[in-house]
Every structure is written in C-alpha cells, then in structure tokens.
Length: 102
Image 1 (spheres, rainbow, N blue to C red):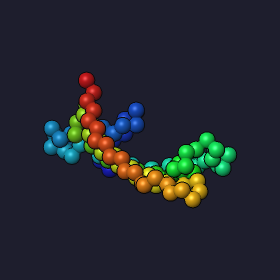
Image 2 (image 1 turned 30 degrees about the horizontal axis):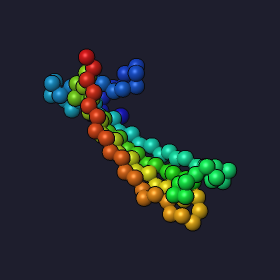
Image 3 (image 1 turned 45 degrees about the vertical axis):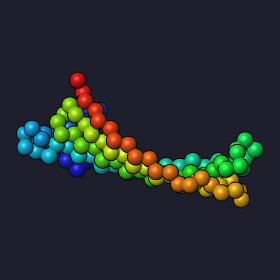
Image 4 (image 1 turned 120 degrees about the horizontal axis):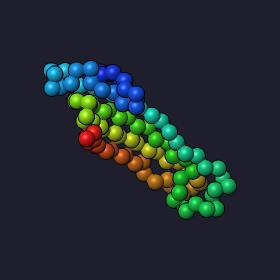
C-alpha cells in the first residue's frame, strides 16, 4: 500500500480522501503464477495444448473515498508446448474495474 491505512477486510481506506484535499488510498500489487502438466496428461491434450503456462500480473487500485474504488489489472501469460507442435501465442489480459459500496 502506497497511501491510505489498512482496514479489517484488507482493503485500504484513504487517510485523506479527495473530498478533503488528499490523494485517497493507493494500493499496488504484483504476482507470478503458473501451471505445469506432466507427460501423463499428454494423451488428453490437443496437439496445440501447452504443458506449461507462466503468468505475471500487476494491479493498481485507487480509492478516492472510502466508498469507491477503481482498479486496473494487467496480466501476461506465456506458454510452453508439450512437444514439437507450437504453443499458443502469449496472451495479455487487461481489466478496469469500478466498485461502489452502497
């Protein structure tokens, strides 16, 4: 968390909201995750299937006031094939989310 204070549900709330002249709360996160299949899965897989996938993601969330949150998440996944057939092209996923607590 860059700005703000933690809350019991692990979501930061602004120390000073934008309505009070502050920046709100900003949270930045990153993660790496993956999937690996052993050769026993090969008979079940299509020719263009991947044996391994590795993803790297980053997210930024901004809470201008305690009841609102905007988030931007981007993730890039790379694939490794089972054998000689080529793996799918890397994929990029981007999502923008708005949340209001009513």
